[in-house]
Amino acid sequence: MGQLHLYAIGIETFRDFFGKAGEDVAELRQLAEQAFPTPEPPTARMIDKLGPIMRRAAYEPVIRPDVPTGIEMDALVTGSFIPPTRLVAAWALVLVWLDEYAKHTAIVEGTTEEFRDADFELALAGLPSQYTLSACFTHELQIPLGTPLGWHTGWQKGTMMREGAEHWATASEDISKENHELLADVISWFADWSDDEQDLLVVYQP
Image: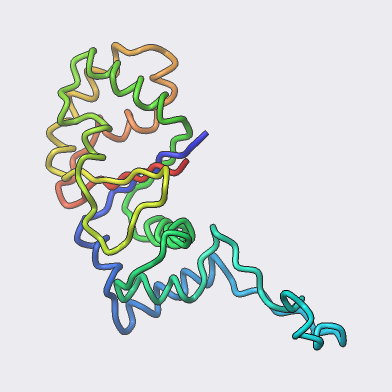
């Protein structure tokens, strides 16, 4: 079961995360520290001082693949390269920033197959293809950060969301109960979209 993250945020505001300076960086660092506090190192024991014969000192921090470190933080705000093995950790930090700065957020749990089926049924019910969820994923974010394996990202202009609001309201009346329940938060949001200043950013996390 994956999660579909949706954010109402100007695309340029989002892209500005990557290349921040001064007070802006300090604020991003504070958010990062609050979400992922640096663990306190345990007190070293006598046996831990026998470093050369140990594969890893017991007090050496364990770097988890899904938890960002200061290295990812620095790389993100400077737009530097992040290796594939650290992309999930980097995106965990980006999602924290999006939760803070987006005007509206929603998280929907489901599989790619479930979202694909719901999107297809909405299209059959009359939702034009340019307004579907799948259409959002055809627009690249154009940021200096890769997408982890199995993840999907994209965005849609706020003007397109506003233009599609009436179509979402109409088409959602003619889909199955299961798909309506799956997309309940999305439908109520998209059908009332009226803000051209905010774009829609989408992230599917498996």
